[in-house]
Length: 109
Image 1 (cartoon, rainbow, N blue to C red):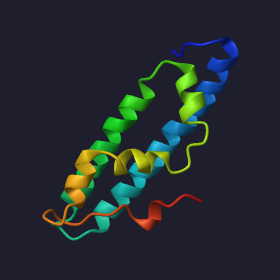
Image 2 (image 1 turned 45 degrees about the vertical axis):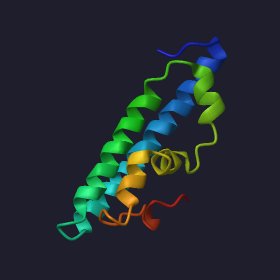
Image 3 (image 1 turned 90 degrees about the vertical axis):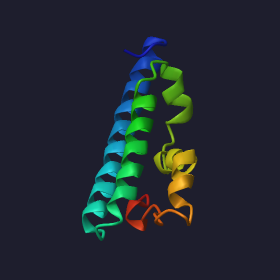
Image 4 (image 1 turned 135 degrees about the vertical axis):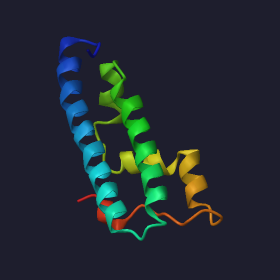
């Protein structure tokens, strides 16, 4: 349940639903990529999916309507940016680990 004024809650509920759909879209893209990768690569992609799912949980657990209105109203590229800024992504991207980049197939339309 979101908190805020009735109008804020109504507005934020719509935004929150769109945010959940965006997380789903990105996760589906990663799943498709993992299936197309050679056997040694999916582990890194699965690690990215785990980061994504953690971020999804953190974001969607927020109950302040103002949070969704302020930070997620314009959500283009925000899900990817959450992943980019996670230190675990930097570890995966490190040349000592297998290279994984966020694919162009997840670019925003």
